[in-house]
Length: 284
Image 1 (spheres, helix red, strand yellow):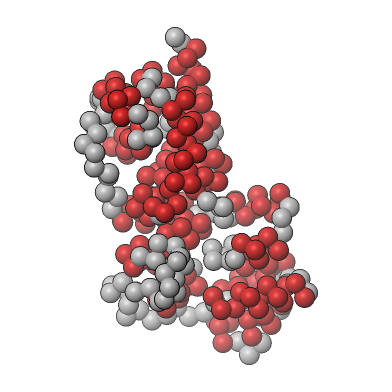
Image 2: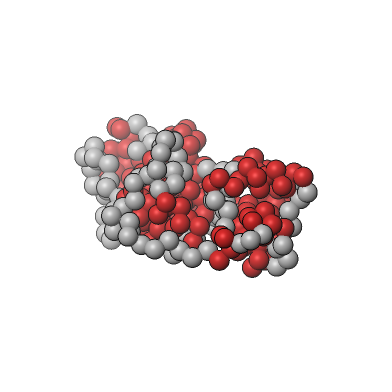
């Protein structure tokens, strides 16, 4: 790693090294040629956060970010490519997605923007009426886009009374702010859950990390997560910590194998951690 100019990979490794004992981490850093830990957490530029959003387009990332109710983070979501008109509308309205009790301040750089036009927002048929009229995917998408925070209860009640069309249900389910209970009402079959995950709807960061077939991508998301959704990070790190300590710990050889396999490994991050530990142990 001394001659490796890949700054990002070093940062990803540093994130995991933070999960082991400080003395063990120092030994591994020395072996891999990583800079000594100065105790300061890396400052993640918000532009880097937006870059991850643009590259991976995972809907749930946006929700975890919006749950911070932070005007700076909201601005990055607003400017990202995957942000829908409904998300941009709610950001401009100051709609809180987390525990904030009232309207969230809108960043000054976007406060003067015109709210995006949502064609069916003022339909004479009403929100539920438009959802029931959906006979094509595009119609379901347009009707779901018009749903606001105050409409979810009525939408759930309408679906219980008579199931909404499939196109409407699907486009509501992949709205990042769809209430979990309503998503469950739409379907609990494993195939439906798989489709949701494929569409970027995850239960939480650990759900993503444990299923993502690119450890490098998983670590990239966790790295920016320290700035983008710090309140959600313990969900993933608390599960990763015992695994990393057991399989990699203070064994420089295991970490070296991990670093070598990281760019091309076809599997999940937990699988890579176990594989690196097993290879290093077998070589002893």
